[in-house]
Length: 357
Image (tube, rainbow, N blue to C red):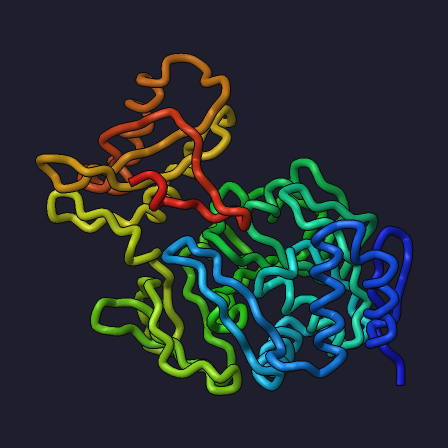
């Protein structure tokens, strides 16, 4: 019986228990991320329980340890392979850290599916040589890869944060990617439980379609509740606000904890950010929308812009942005204030809005 292979630094190891042992012995101490790969690889080949164990990001609450059985993990990786038509012999690139759920799942997919898996250091500018069939990255990583990295991929799966119109335009115009997918999921659901394909920028408004064996409903607060029996996920409550469609698909609206109540109007920061992406000048390195306490409104909507060298009059630029955003969103959702400052992000690239409150 043939097995897949794991590649790193122009070397290759069989995707077996013996391969894991040799990789750990020769490479595991060279860097912490390589040691993490070796341990996940070893545990899976040794058939240890739990099949997958990670710590959540902590962006919406204190980080916590989440564990999944081998059966649930195997079910999850098989669903991804089927949904994206990833077959035995697939050449994939692992650019995500295996301390997180998506990185561990990618490694297990390669072990189970007998793939050829190329390892690259998990950072904000991943690079590899030549073409691969499949890779998964966060939007933050993908931007760095497009601008500063090398390599190409037939299929790219995005997850871990909202995809901006600007990023999707760049991906659709790039010859380095053929198909772009976005996943909806979390550590507790063992990666994505719903997918949508992004062929056009307008698809960012399209609903996510749950995978087979998955049911997503909305609770009394409008937040997603997830049932995925094959993954041993039952009535999982989330803080993700969704708009349900008649066919069981759903549109993601943002996090309930992030919603800004400004004078009685509920403002979703992600909606404002999506609109601002369409007018964002190239001197803006990063930005975020959040709610700041206000004596009159309760909270005012604020746009924070990160830039080392703003061009021209920032106040004049903000007035122009405000006029355009009013046309798109209305007065109540348009930021009342703009400020210069760093945008706090986690090591996964997720915006830490709580740090701005």
